Picture (cartoon, rainbow, N blue to C red):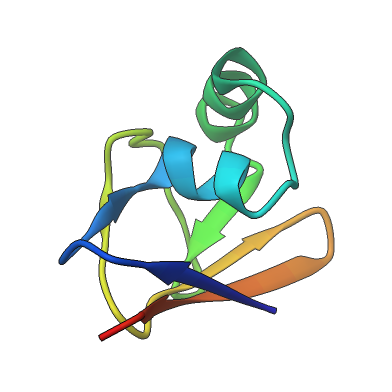
Length: 70
């Protein structure tokens, strides 16, 4: 799955919401703090982590890639 962004980056918690893998920012915060989310293959505990074009996010056996719309 691909998540398209217009800006140079998107924060991890916002990307999870945009991908519809979580319904709220609070849910995103919890799963990130619990170490359930990987960015580019490594567990990420920073909900404000900046994701850029090509970054891969994994959660709950789902994978999405950040893509710039430009």
